[in-house]
Image (cartoon, rainbow, N blue to C red):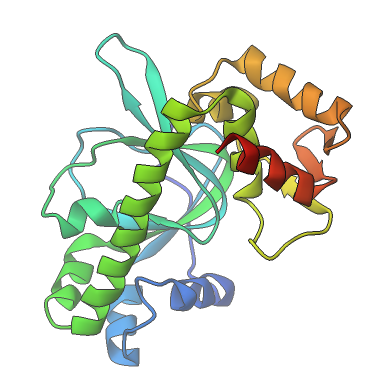
Length: 239
């Protein structure tokens, strides 16, 4: 694994605009936003870099600008379980900060070349103590996260591999999307398989089955959802 201690890059206009759009920072007045910016830094990381390790001290919360990050926990038997694959525009580690935690409960590793913004946890926590709107936005995000986790338990315990994979692919597009849509896999297939709690060979077989049915087209990391409506019907029937 490669260390994430190097690769600091400037907070350019694109990164600053991404930070401004981030739900955790949207309510901030300009002066408070500047405080966050002044104590934040961006990192450019190659694939397979460790951003932070499970159990280490929480110093920052993160916003992914580009690439992909997998959050994983180490099981007692030494196996690694992928909890979530973070996509650009998503934040992570803020729940631990809000709940008063001092250490990261998971490890974060890049699954492709990535750019992340490290937002100083102490600075953000101070702003939380002075902004009701900021607290409400964070609570709203955490509520969505809790809802997602409850549904995730259902997906991983009540449904088969086809349901899990189709549901995962559809999560990359908006609910209003009904035409053909392209999905880029930001993580290797074995990582996605771990995320979906299925074996890598089962993932590959399910992708081929969906392709044979004419529901998707496969081209490396690019997957075209040929018939979005039928894919939705597929998981609706099983649900």
